[in-house]
Every structure is written in structure tokens, then in C-alpha cells.
Length: 128
Image 1 (tube, rainbow, N blue to C red):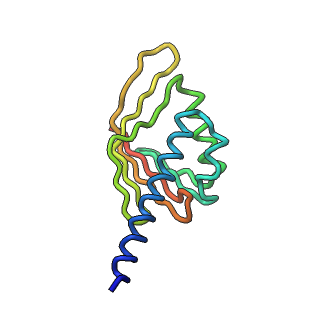
Image 2: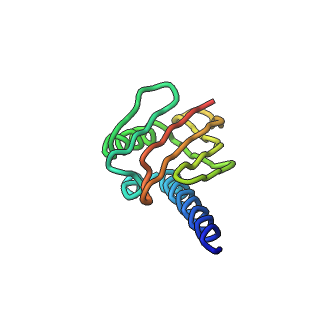
């Protein structure tokens, strides 16, 4: 009789672990620690920004992250609401951005991460 309960607990634990992977990834991004992002990204990770083509592979995604941080004086992803189910972690988030010499802006954003074996395999981003 405990098998369904054990299975449910294991699924909930996996979802929480996946959420923590994403939160830790975003915290390192916020700290502008690009080299610290490496362990969070699968070698074949795919990043898809809202209106652009996909970026494939850890090295390319890290290059893009570095370019973003170099372009913006401030770039923070602040999770407002997080939902994790299985390997999928969804975020309703605010992006705080500021180009050098300009005012700070807040953008509403939505992101979908897929996490497998404690690494992000897919990251899709939609800015509003």
C-alpha cells in the first residue's frame, strides 16, 4: 500500500530538486558569475529566446549569457511564481534591466526550463 505514496513522494522530491536547480542557476546569473553556470547546463542545452532562433550547446549558451551581461549594466531575473512538475519548471518572472547611462526597466517575462539529471536541457524565454 505504500508504493503509490512512495512514488508520489519521489515525484514531488524530483520536482523540488529541479526547481532548486533553476533557482540556483538564476542566482548565479544574477551574480554575473558566468563560469558558475557551467554545471547547471547540459552539454547539449538549447536556449530559445522569444523571437529569435535557438542557441544550441553549453558553450554557445554561455557566450550568449556573457554577451547579455556585458551589454547590460543591470540584468536580473526575478522569479515571481514558480511551478515545477516532473522535469519542467515554469517561471512567471520580472526582468530588471538597465543599459549603461539609461534608466532601469522592468519587463514581465515567462520562462520554461527542462531539467534532467540536475542539468538544464532546455530554456525557453518569452518577454512581454
